[in-house]
Length: 358
Image 1 (cartoon, rainbow, N blue to C red):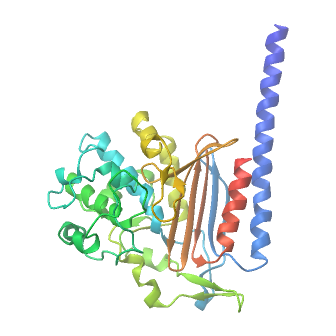
Image 2 (cartoon, one colour):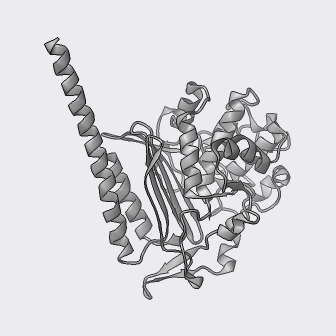
Image 3 (spheres, rainbow, N blue to C red):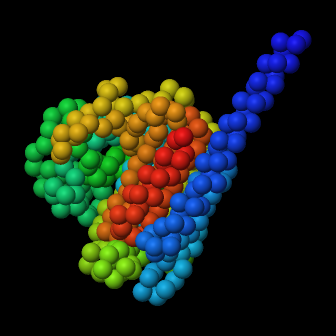
């Protein structure tokens, strides 16, 4: 009996210590954010959740600096690269329904596609050898015209499929087309019916948002270090935000709701594990700089000594910089959507991730 009581006391102390440590982590975050606000160098929405509950949420800066419109926590952003894990999840849903196989050639579903050696898994993990936007002009047509014009944007592969990592928006546009081909729905309708609606992501949309969502859409900005203020980017620079036909818009709260859905997902655990396991079980060499990266189905993956597995993605577009981190072993998610290009975004991201990983 004495041993049992001692064990119970030890467990209570351990749980209390963990809770206290987590509380200390969260309590330090406002100081980090406020220190940058004093310099007027960040703008956007910051949200942190633990165990499915929001523990910190703050809107900073402006929705549109030219009109001095304060940022709202309900602000909607073009998510850019944060659309990638959402599309990856949609493909995993179709796999769970038995409608596709990750290792099948894309030509099995889209016969017009000119590269039979590229599989769905290659597209999911950016190992297809297809170029990114910086290599070719972005595809701006309708998704169903993409196979016929693919050789215009990718006249040859930059690497053999499965051999190297090369981030390619073009690959995820093809996955959006695959969703349409396999499901019989438009990409917009599929994402709405199977992802946004079940998660109650009321502000999210695939494709350019219509009214009334567009009224809450934030404008992109760059930070002018000389004037020490934000400047709205010209319309010509912002034009490519919605050129990607697979773009998703949404709020920080939408991504939090998706995170909650992931926590209780009814997908087979083996599928979820596969989606968050590095391609080939190891780090891949990036073709751009020779560095390595571990990447799953729309997730960059790292391992932390204390925090365990970390899943993350970055979204960058002219005037926007976004970060989305999931620490599944800690049951924590961190979302930072910024409508400003400023080096302070990366600094803030690093500070918060370090705190949450302690």
